[in-house]
Figure 1 (cartoon, helix red, strand yellow):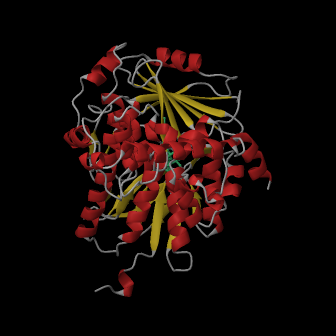
Figure 2 (cartoon, protein in one colour):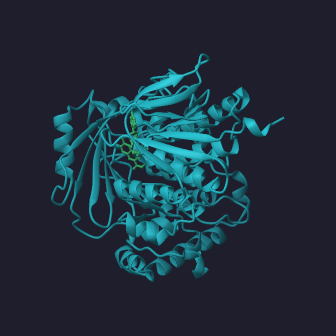
Figure 3 (cartoon, protein in one colour):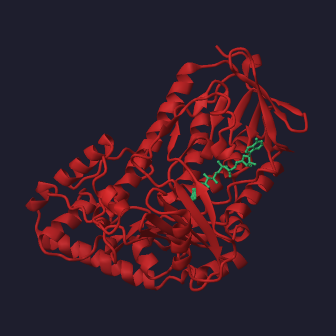
Length: 501
Ligand code: FAD
């Protein structure tokens, strides 16, 4: 049974990037009227990674759970709205597809929409799947509006996320966290002090200051100062599934309309991102240095950007994978200290937030509780594996054979967990997902379809229905979407009004 003296009284967060400040803001907000103290130590000399500008829809819930006004956040971070990702040249050069957030059409007579669409295709209908996605139709027309819910139309289901300036978002979160009483200490941690059993007792800064705590959260980025350099948890390297190991990033001036989606374009040895913000565009090339040199990668990136350069291209190396244990003794790792999956589906900030949510659910006492730690680590590993498989799907299904990199992808060894899902999809036209997963069936269908993976079958009981009726429902839904989307403001018009209000 718990005793009051066993409660954690002080958490020390080491690192003040997005992970550190998001942890401080979230945990601080939940315990703001309690006796829990939180101190965040960050080093101005080391600084933050400064990338990480695209998100997935749970970001909207994260902000609202903190009581942050969305318009204020968008304004402060020069943000824009994101309805999904446009993938250029992934299945074949010259071919594009869209991965929208949110579900595709509604269920019809309790049948999954995708099954109905497959049935209509089998009957000769040529309508693309994305003609039934509210987000894809809005994105195509470069429109945006909130709250869609108020309209009581098919757009009410629209899901969206944000693009934002990472350094402005960091500042915003810091201000928020300091505003709710989080103590910030500037300094570089030089030493991590452990007790005999390896538990962390304190960190010593370069200045000689010692910061003690009951529990420590490692947000020191790729260094993993506590979780790896001190506690040596080990790293599961997934480069054999996702071989990209570097990114080069550059910021440019805006040239055209602010698109309500991210663009990911496949290149010779990886892919480039384009993230539209209000005041500039974020660009980068994620590549595998076995197939292209840093210099060539920089050239490829610079050839693909529009607009004047605002920064020099910066190369960032990484190793895809995750810590063998995200939580060890009295130390939890978050963000880049926990693991890294390339930003193809913009999942890193979401993983930080989900990790914090698990931690709050399993909040420990000062005594080591192996069952909590084990369950936490199991869930984190499942989340990483789910996203890893989803990312691998984008590569292993490519039909490109124009470079060694893409030829490698075509013949790569597929994770057995993904192979299982792909086999099931091919046999049934259905995705295997659980409710807790970030990427639900629609996301899997979007990638399967976009990459040209066709199932051999659809639900055979659909043949018991009259195909004309099904087709009529699909046709009227499609037409309705086009018309309603056309009535919305453009993303730029919306942003101006939203940020002025
Ligand atoms: P960092 O930003 O590196 O922060 C580390 C902190 O630790 C800093 O404050 C540093 O000063 C401090 N620190 C380190 N050592 C010490 C020490 N000894 N003493 C004191 N302080 C110390 N995520 C997304 O969600 N969407 C994206 O589109 C996206 N794109 C990405 C693109 C690239 C190329 C990369 C590499 C990452 C991307 N990410 C993206 C991931 C995202 O950038 C990170 O998850 C996020 O920024 C969190 O970083 P962090 O806080 O873990 O680390």
